[in-house]
Length: 66
Image (cartoon, rainbow, N blue to C red; front, side):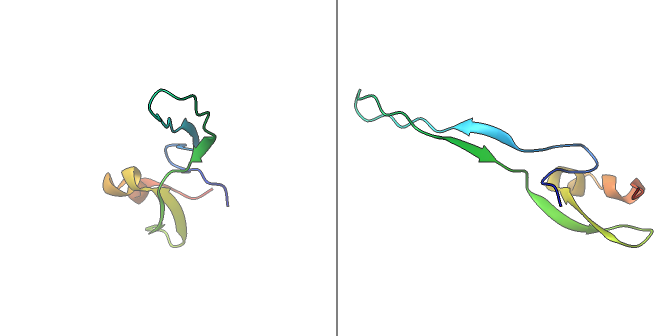
């Protein structure tokens, strides 16, 4: 299963965490951040993983699985 919300298409993002060590150069690695996906039960039966924003707004109630 992909790490993407099927309703709003929210996916992963790249982020960089800067570490400042008193003026010294410290290159840091990039970090991939994933959305917070949770299981939700559809009204027509079945379950899907959706992001918490769609879960709070209850967008999954009108979603039909393809």
